[in-house]
Image 1: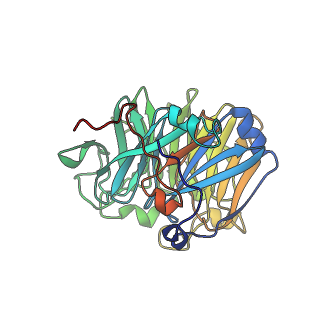
Image 2: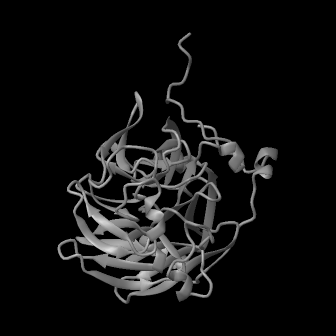
Image 3: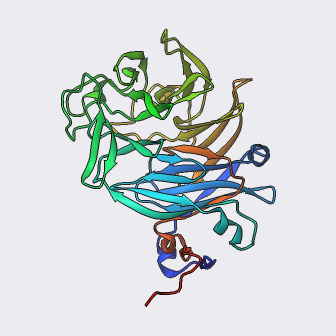
Length: 361
C-alpha cells in the first residue's frame, strides 16, 4: 500500500471549488452516538461527499465523480452511478487502519473497476444479493449489468409500451425487499417522450413491482422510497415533505415538512437523514408547491427525529453545492474512499497490492 499525499497538486487546484457550510451544534454528537458516516452525491458539482466526525468536529471530504447520482452501499462494497459509468469500490479495512494517522479510519473504499453504460440517466442504485439493480431513468426501466451489453432491462411499468431512450415517466426511486425491487417512484403514468413534465407537480405515484399496481398517487415529484422496519417512507420532493405510505390502503401521512427540495433518504434508529436541495428555476424544477411554502430553500442534510417528527439538526451548504441527489449511511465512524480521480481530488491514489507482490519473471 502507498499512502496518499496530503498536498494539493496543480491539477487539483484547477478543479477546486469553494465550498462553505454551517451545521447545528448537535450534529457531530448525533453521528458519533450512532457511530456512522454519511455519504452523499451531488451531480451538479460532480462530487461524492463523506461526512464524519474528527475530534468532536464535523469533517467533510469531497471526491470527484462525473455527475454522481445513485449510491449503493454496504459494509464491504459500494457502487456509484455517474454520467456514463457505474463505479465499483471495495472496502479494505486492513488498509484503512494503516492510513496515517494510523487507526484514524475504520473503512476505506477503494475504486476497483467501472462499467460503461452510456448516458442512461442513472438514478437510484441498490444491491440485490451479488447483483446491482439500477433505476434506468432514460429508458424507463429497472435494469442490471452485463459485460456483453450496456444494460439488461429487467422490468418496466406496464403503461410504458417500449424500451426507448425517452424518459417517458421519469422512473427515479427504488425500494428493495428481500434483495429484490418492491416499490418504485415515477413522476407520471405517461408513455410519451418526457410526457411527465406537464403534470410533474401533482401526478407522481408509487408503483408495486412486479405488478405495476399503483400504491398511492397525487404526489409531487416523489423520490427515495425506503422500506424501514416495515414502514414505507418516501420523499414528496415537490412539497419538501417526508411522508409514510400504507402499501395496502395507499394512505399518506406527512411526517415533517422541510425547507428544501427533499431527495436522498437514510434512516438509522430513530433518525431520518434527508437531503435538501435548492430549486433551479427551469422547466423541470419550476412551479412546484414548495416554492409557495418557503421563502428560501436550503441545500444540505436535515436530521429528523421520527419520534417527535421534527427537524432537530441540519448541515447547510452556503456555497459550492446547490443540490443533493442521494444520501446513504454506513455503520463506520470514520469511513473514507480513494476515488477514480484521486489526483484531481488532491491526493495520490492508494495502491492495493497482494501481500507477496514480487514479480514472477
